[in-house]
Length: 291
Image (cartoon, rainbow, N blue to C red):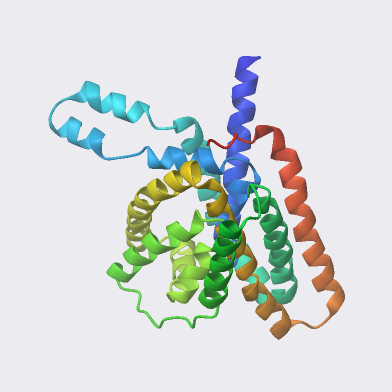
């Protein structure tokens, strides 16, 4: 019975990884949003924040016992199935998402619009009360996102240092509900290039991007872990503002490519309902928020 429970939990984490990976290749949708909806967000951020290079220094000093103790602190039960799901989704979904974004642009972005809108409502549930401080942070997040989405893409090259920096910045956005890492890559002129690198298996580019992402996520997760444990309400209010503000991107894409209203409406409703279904399905597996 216990083994069945472990297998079920592992499969559910893998499924979350698949959903997060799909979200991470979509400009306008954040993998962090999916992690939050499916109740694994705080566990993920805390687990990442516990990773450090202390084990490496112990190993170099020959203190293998202490190095092993440090590694045992890592949440492998989370990381292995989650990363497997994310990796599989990114590798298999990149071509499919490019097709949808090219051929069915308006309905696809309408689906994202509904998904983000419903997700913002879900995140709002974690705001303890609508006091002045929370309202201020919500507005700050909203204004920041609206301005951010309105930025013009930087005409950056695809040199290895730029790819490394892009990985650092994009991964920080990917674990934030509301800010799309894929959209950050669009702004840095690296989105299509990195999709092509994945499809063509350009190992050097993928490794350099991954190294930047690793350094970025290990650094940023510590700040996020602190904010979620000590200033949860204002952090969530800020994230609500971010998510509502990023709706500017799918709205612009919809209005500039729309042919018919009904497909847009149906796709938006589908995205909205999907979030509600995901929330209900994963509700009993949510990790409680710590004070």
